[in-house]
Length: 146
Image 1 (cartoon, rainbow, N blue to C red):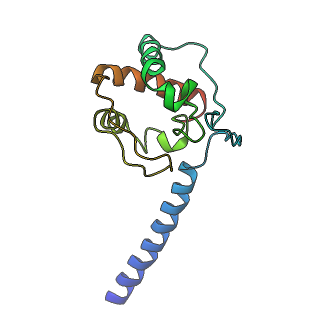
Image 2 (cartoon, helix red, strand yellow):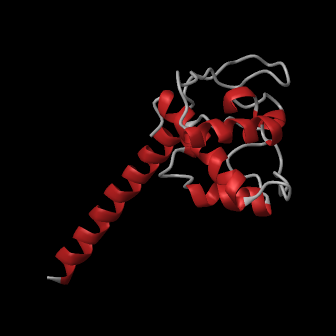
Image 3 (cartoon, one colour):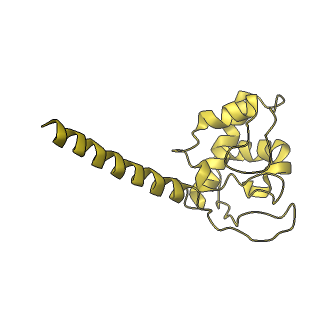
């Protein structure tokens, strides 16, 4: 009986491992990658929602003031500078709202992209980041990222 339990556990581990690899590759696929090699060019094409919520509107203002210099207009990223936030890597199930709060407060070590570490953003309050997250999530949804 122990042989059957061990064999079942091994099969389950292989299936779960294959699922994790497949799911991981799905999450890292870009929305629509732009292949311009020019530094500062947008990294992805993004659609902007027709209307933003009041929170999203405030978030866009804060994003444009603090984040867009690196992460680009409409969070499309900038080639050679910073990644797009309108990307499946940043969908809520992979990078939840808390991850954005922590990134702004503490900075982030490079782990998905090769742009280098993101420094902390001490001038941005938690309330600012909450609004920025609302904006990013609305733009993500407009681009099929839920």
